[in-house]
Image 1 (cartoon, rainbow, N blue to C red):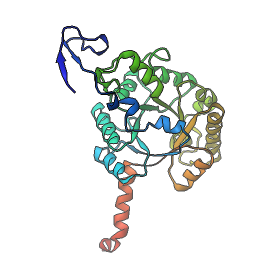
Image 2: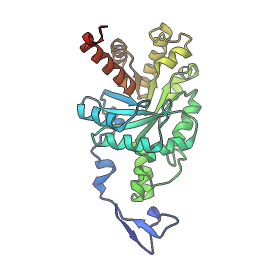
Image 3: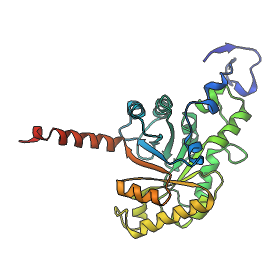
Image 4: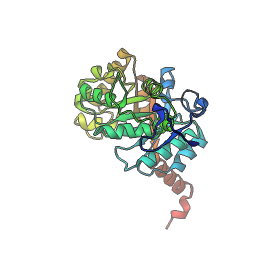
Length: 293
């Protein structure tokens, strides 16, 4: 990106405390003509997507390797349980884009700044964990969108604003149109208000967290308990009635098949820790004779 000194910098691309401004980038370098097909758009076309997750053992080479292997449609970054930084999110999103993989970030629903930093770092969406009500979900949407839908702070100097090269009005319109907002349904109160949550303008997807859902239903670890399945049925019905999509973590192949039968369109069968564990198990099985004492 080139910088040029100037005496009359455009208002939409100004660095407030410096007499420089950013030259417009090629329109094909960002946004609508990006080679990455957005998760939000693919869901809108009726596709069923398979994603992986990274967090506890994150390294950008995991993203690159899985991108090279093919078969995955995108990924999400776990900021709820993993201590990742803004720099980590930037590198993960960049590694994904190199292989045409879009991503979003799972966040704790604690503060506005976390939401906007995810978008500014290059992720095109967020997924809020531990949502307790429709009002709670509405707050997440307002944190995620610019006016008139929300009140995200206007700072076009991140990746999503082309580092200041996109006019503010265009940036806001594009972000509000293309940004992806998912809400996790994993608390008892969220299940009770799932219809109202699904009806919220700006909520694109409901996402079932089986482990926490089992805890909320009073049957910790029994993800196939009838109470959990009934809650999943309520999620599926709410999304069907409101024209929304839903996704889930898929702990087992049988569980994944059950979800698909119920209309789940975004599945996460693995993550960085599970991949390492599966690799270790495969090596021990393949070289079993070496472990004979």
